[in-house]
Image (cartoon, rainbow, N blue to C red; front, side):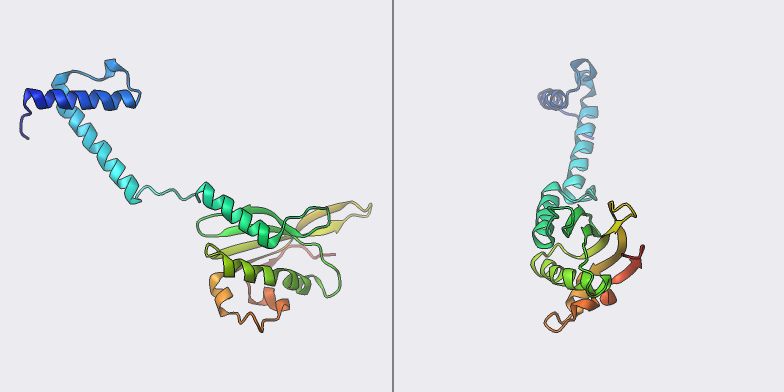
Length: 196
């Protein structure tokens, strides 16, 4: 390592002092001008950490807030949000890097059975979501249905969950697809409670 001239040492000292002060490190912790090589080493390490950070080595696994908000609004626009006690719609969205979870409250009509009616309700919305939003890749749906107790009090509980992927979306001929087959083509269908 080459020895720095007095002028270069002073420049390094001033740069280190400015950096330390901007980081909020007290003056008394700066050391003396004689330890300027320590300061250079510190700056090199700090620079390497910064380069690794901007290159993506220290990427966060969380979805950025701006993406989360626009994904939430996209889902709310397509799937709807329940406005009244018996309305169907997305009640909770949990975005993630690998899978997005949508809690969907569904109030059945009672005409064709829960599974078929759910397909008729959700298939067009799922089609629209995958068609218009490239972020839609792996989506887990948790479907809640209404359950009334003997006193007539309504409680919403999970009936079924299933997963839908862009691969499934791509395999479906949507112009000829029977919406009642939605849960037949979905992955990981799990019935948790028999609907009323």
